[in-house]
Image 1 (spheres, rainbow, N blue to C red):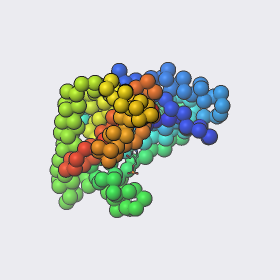
Image 2: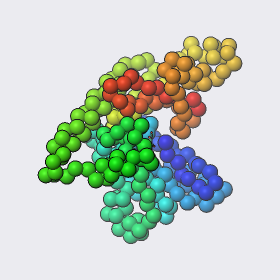
Image 3: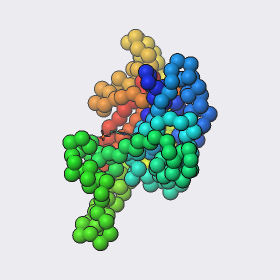
Length: 251
Ligand SMILES: Cc1ncc(COP(=O)(O)O)c(C=O)c1O
């Protein structure tokens, strides 16, 4: 998810689920001001497009003079016609001084998007990194095939995300925001009431019980920071040919 990073600790800030996981200035300021009490905030980490929320941020800015650590590994995976990927570098540049001079580190990855899967790690594959930052250009022999394969991969994950969104939206107790990019669907779930006595009988909190059930049944479960009053199920859709993988937030 996203955090304001301080020299000693990580501080969460939360997206607003009801407005499509948008990031509000007020919430950023709240976290930043809270951090001031104990330490000197030095960097802001933003994941755009996000994981696991799948949101694509609108054109906004950062005016606290922080180092911006911008994780943009999902930038090719935007398909919602109402969303557009804005790189922080482009936005900062267009805003002029002082924003265009602030320190900014942007992170791409070979393991996301269309190029590869999680097995191809940036640190291990210089060839993959080279292909990522220097894709075939118009007129080059492999350009047409590259475009064809890229479109086919992105279309497959889009189709899969739509299917998952439609299916989950039909479940009782699930609230699913429109998916702005494939690969992650992040429905809010109400813990089923019948779960509560069963969980209590086992001496567990209902949400922890639910998370362990997901772990037992799907083989996968992990936590993501989010508004503590809510519960979500994270569903990455990395490989169209493979089965879905479920993760829950147990906070
Ligand atoms: C937003 C985001 N950034 C980075 C990574 C890690 O990418 P890599 O496979 O290059 O380690 C992930 C992995 O899931 C991710 O979701």
